[in-house]
Image (cartoon, rainbow over all chains, first blue to last red; front, side, top):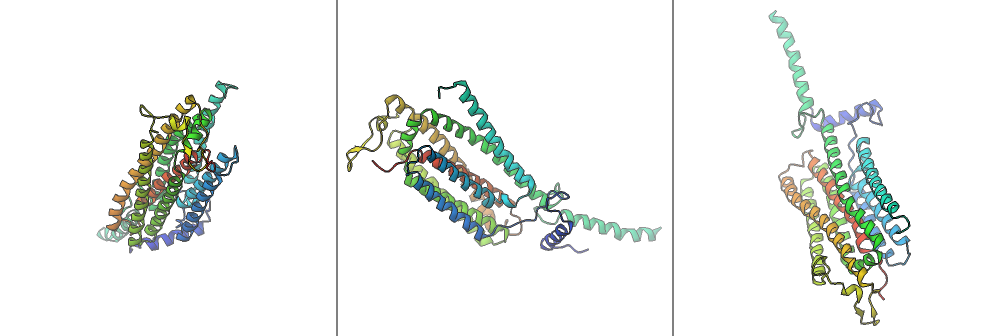
Length: 127
Length: 258
């Protein structure tokens, strides 16, 4: 028995994974084929983020009334999404991690909506 | 009898070697994890849980902002105008650049490029510190203008806005003294939110110094990337907070100069 190097080891794992036909991680929940995001992908995300920053600043000077904050927040959410998906590798993580991120955002939004509905309903018509 | 033991011995020995191989494949592999993958997954999971508590923490501040902005919109719009959009936008770009180098650092660690890892971490730090430098400049300007909530706060810029020498008109619409007092709420939230964000940055820069030292020693260029990866998650999270702070604080009611 000779020890295999980590590299050979991971290759063996990959073969095992394809043989198992387990795309949804059922038989081996911890196993995620480890994906490395390339610098080219990072560069693309970086460029998009910079362009969108310019767009947000420019749109803020166009009077759109109520739509101004909506547009600004929409762009901010989009930027946050691509940061989470690519810079933070969420796109290539296991279902457990994806579920964790999703539940956190859901929890945050629930708290906002519940607290806000309390404020709105207590002084009904006075806001 | 002796023979039996002799023939069985190599077998048990072989099993022991096999088990050892499975459990101590890499130096960073802790014995309580079945596989290195499991260890890595548990690490990311833990980091994400921490970041979720951070979302809740900043969430309280964002909620306070949402509420007071609805109640005292005129004060928020007027106070937001006094922030420098140039510095705010430049700082957003600087922070994004810092995040980009952090992302490259994770890649460098994955592909085991030690030199690139050290340099990308250094660039991440440099842009992070540049952000904090601009932030200091902005805070100082608020101090000079008496726009820090408290005993020395001055509402004159909001009740009686300065006149633009070119157009001979006030640079923004004046608001009532009562509403002008409410601008203190905006500035309180501005300092609380950006201050808490800056504190996260300062902690991050401290951690970066530690990571640079370890990276230079070669700790992360032999297949062990978890500390770099998890710090990356933290750094990107801090970036995301700023991506929301920027439009909410700087861009409430921008308009072409009167």
